[in-house]
Length: 305
Image (cartoon, rainbow, N blue to C red; front, side, top):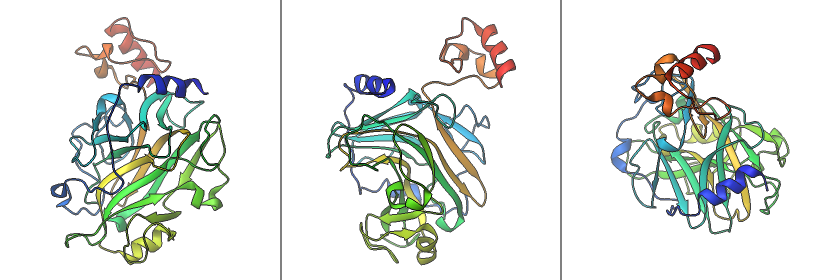
């Protein structure tokens, strides 16, 4: 087994939480409809913040994430929900991820397990304003799951906007998008979900539940008032017993903003200011080495930005 996944299995042995496929988040979170991306960010350092911003790469690490039981509203912008033995961790590798040195490793030992990492910064964004959705995946060659299974993109939506009801989860899976290439083991692959085929966990206009596979553009056309109503992120769902995989470079673009989430096991300094006020003690070099003092951190930032 790939060393990253072996470490993942060991370090998650004591973590317990549950999740569900179809529970909507706190409805109070979706009261605002936005024609574009989130404006929640208060930190303009796009390479060293978990908050969304107008554009750029946003690093996400374990301290940014809340781990919560099922049926609970999100308490932070990032929440990792798990079911039974399903779990996830921010690890170095595997191989060479598309961004940085790490990724989000996911495991579902049995078919009943599930793990989801959701971001809630985009609640209220109109689906019709979205112009880019993509992510990268890696399937561990040691996986015993059905061939072609990978983490998916999940997006919780409200298809009728401010009207009552309308919750569903849209799902993008590479296995239903063969035109984008064959799924491979042991390599990173990038998937364009915006131009791809999706399915819905519930009946919505233009898409029947679970068994209808529809292009993103056609879903948007049939649901012009649809908004992101909850989480957006990577999911390794039930039915994927024996799957060890990873995801990185999760991206969402709209007419007003774009962001790519870089999952990492640690942060590196981007500017010398990141090293101040004890920050150097929490940062690492790109190869994971700790800094001896603030000066070394500042020097690294000045020469490696």
